[in-house]
Amino acid sequence: MHPATKNRRRALLAGIGAGIGAAAAWRLWPEQGIANPCRAALPPRLANHALVQEAWSGIEAANVWDCHAHLVGSGDSGSGSWINPETESLLNPLQYAQRLFYLNAGCAHEAPGRVDQSYIERMHNLVDGLRPGVKLLLLAFDHSYREDGTVALAASPFYTPNEYARRAARSHPGYFEWAASIHPYRADCVAVLERAAREGARAVKWLPAAMGIDPASPRCDAFYAALARLDVPLITHGGMERAVNAVNPEFGNPLLLRRALEHGVRVVVAHCASMGEDRDLDRGAHGPYVASFGLFARLMDDPRFEGRLFGDLSAITQINRAVPALAAIVARSEWHARLLNGSDYPLPGIMPLYSVNYLAELKYIKPAIAPLLTEIRQHNPLLFDFVLKRNLRVNGKGFGAAVFETRAFFTPRRQAMANRDFSRPMR
Image 1: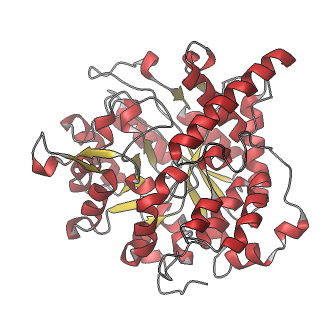
Image 2 (image 1 turned 120 degrees about the vertical axis):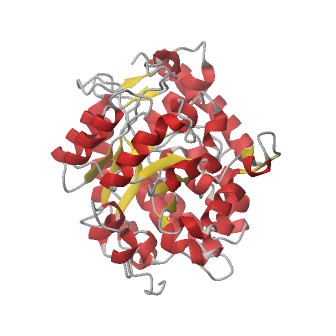
């Protein structure tokens, strides 16, 4: 890359990054700067530190599957991956900067011609920095579709084919599992789901606001019936979406997921819908806008959906989600049997999105561990995410080991709760 081009990109990253930091909370400059330093393996003094060792206490690493890891790429390896060209134009500065942030977070930002390979290699190296047996659930990502079942390419933020996710998992079986992404408006959606299930897909991933999916539409019924029949869980975003452009923000309303739940689908609401507001449809089509997290909590507290509705912990420690949802998620121990840990990789590598000092000021972590967490993050954002969550405390409560042992949930034809021991105490 030409130095002048590189400098322009870094300047744009800095400008947008400062805006992200300010918008996310009250900081004018992120405490860990703008760019991910993409450092190599964790030094022994960090890897062997008591804080890291204690984080693994009581956890069986072979049962730890990070259930929310994005697989993205440019397609330069022939993977079929695609990123909307608008993100490569300075005429769209926000999307341009988002693309650079994501590539930098995945340490593939300076790898022309080998973005796909660099992104995979970085994930591989980060998992090596955890414990043997830990895996990432790689998420495919389908196109946006129109109501008539045709692809809306211009509205699609990026595309990660199911085949690429499957191939990556099969090529690195000690590191990765995979989840398909299938738009329910596709005429072949059920056939594609059946094939994905046969080929080892552990779940289906949706981002309704970006993919143009109304989860309450009757068009989804056949797909829901197939998900329930095959016992394939649905991981779907809830609440506000900022990571990519939203086709229809209303489709992120957690209440729209009742239709899937009533079909018997196991639904995992990404981020526990911990950001934004949605219309309270229980008070009519023109009901008031309320916190999306409150609507998620309403569904979680509905006894009809116990054993069907779950939440994932991806991104919940970000600055813009820390108040008030994070405290409620940690404090509500009766939910913990229905929570699944995920990192939302590569987002833990986007420096402006997290502030351990802010979490310390909120008294969610001990101030003394903040410098160590900061240093770990510079080398291994996945380990940072894990150790941070293991050390969260709200009124003396924290996440037990079983929240991180998600493997049973994604094992086909088995009910997760029958295989997870929630009686084990926290460390």
